[in-house]
Image: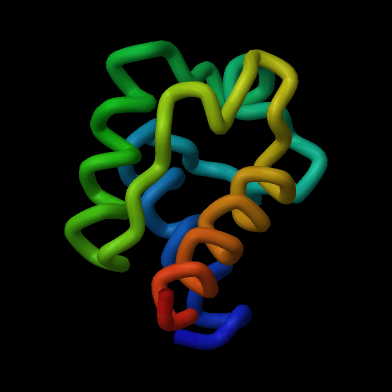
Amino acid sequence: MNEHDIKKEVLMILRESLYVDREIEAQDRLCYELGMDSLDFIIVSMKIEKEMDVIIEANDITKETTVGEFMEIVKSRAEQKKTPD
């Protein structure tokens, strides 16, 4: 999965999971602008794990984490998965 596909998938999962009906910006914070709470995090994480085979840990994000930072975390996890140990 390339960077464009990762961003597209993450945005789709966020939009559907958080019921966002507007354009999501990279600088939007997950908790503040998008209203993500702990239950939403679990739902989003499970969808990302299922759709992208990438695990996101609870300590990967904070209340200040932006959508752009979150996409970088997912991209980094996907790249780690491709790298042989």
